[in-house]
Image 1 (cartoon, helix red, strand yellow):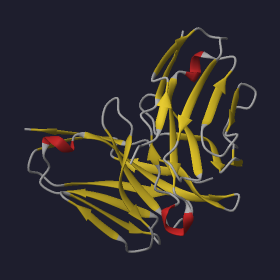
Image 2 (image 1 turned 180 degrees about the vertical axis):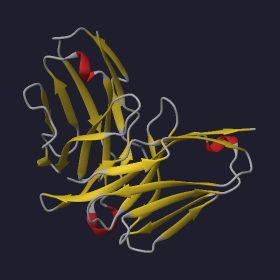
Image 3 (image 1 turned 60 degrees about the vertical axis):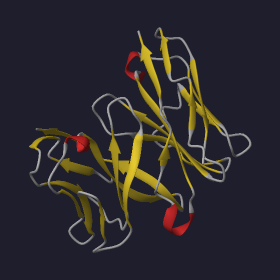
Image 4 (image 1 turned 90 degrees about the vertical axis):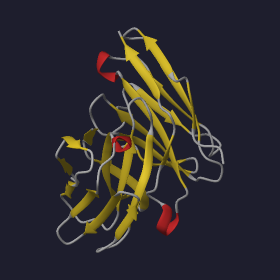
Length: 116
Length: 114
């Protein structure tokens, strides 16, 4: 079974530039998450989708971050304009959902962003 | 606000020794998850604990959950070098009527030395 796919794996940009990350979840997984992991810290949820609807975006800095999941499968996360503090690994995860499986997330390899 | 605290944050062990990592959380939740992360890699699911008193074991690792004490433990038995990694606990909170919204601790970086 294919895992969660993310691209690009690495991205270096200058502050005030824009960047976009792409995620393809595990087939059949209705729920998709974007997490931000700053070096030395635990992942922090940015946004949670259920199919193509947003469940939770309370921690997404909406003045610069946006995310979409148009057809309920792939998702993109965009940052515009980037700040130095956005340097982090952006992890996409998906889950089967349902009563028992909801929280067992399957993570992709992540996209490492460096903002100079 | 749900907060998740792990301790210790750093743990240096000798091979063959036993140790326990603790995960405390601040508000009621019945579901707790443990993940492992190797350097430069993504997170791998280790255990899913879905009820009070749940205990799961896999190899040298055993996880338990006490929802009344809001505490989970990850016990390491006879540590080996291959267990060196960062271990995260994550607690599920219910948001917007949906499940699967995880709050992670800061992680425990485990180093097992010969």
